[in-house]
Amino acid sequence: MHTINTKGLLLRIFIPTSLLSLAYLLLGQFSKIPHLLLFCILGTVVLMPIELGIILSASKKEYGTYSLKSALCGQEKMPVWNVLLMALLLFGMAGLFSISIAPVENQIFASLRAFVLHHLPTGFDWTDMEYLRSFSRPTLVLTCIYYSIFNVLLGPITEELFFRGYLTSHYEKQNRFTPILIAILFSLYHFWLPFNNVFRIAAFTPAAYVAYRKKNLYISMCFHCFCNLFSVIGFILAIA
Image (cartoon, rainbow, N blue to C red; front, top):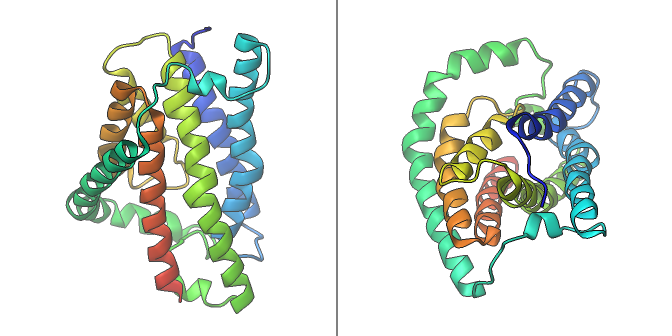
């Protein structure tokens, strides 16, 4: 198995997200559809293919065929009920962080967030329900459906294969801090959501560490899907 040095790790993480964020920033200036929908589409055609392509290419070099083996190497089987139970417990812990850490972080960065959004066209603020309601009902329904599929399934599954699977197992410096480092970098790579890093690190580090220790990335994958499902439900209820 080939290993990834620190430079290679950073390039693999931040080049794809930089391309996504740049495309979103540029196209968002002229978007005639909800920016959230635009972002999900770009995530599907820009970010996911690059991350999956890196995994497929690594598998080709290591195993001779294009597959997800490089992301699944070293993983151990675990009963489904055990995976789901651990994921739910971690989800509960993240819920505690959402009512303790997140509000404080939001308050600290409120002024900076408002300043940044003030200099961007309307739409980059995904919490602006008045802007979203300016679109037709079919457009909003399409947005909710695409957002649900991308944010609950496609996005988190790809990210977990990439971060908790491929990057974590192939980083050359393997020790108990490896999953913590990857969790921090995973949070920072969310250029499009720059003001929630403390909460994201607090929420995802335990899941990343448990998945690493148990050698089962499905724990963090289910946890990630649960977290995103919660945010999607909240969005749909707000826009309804």
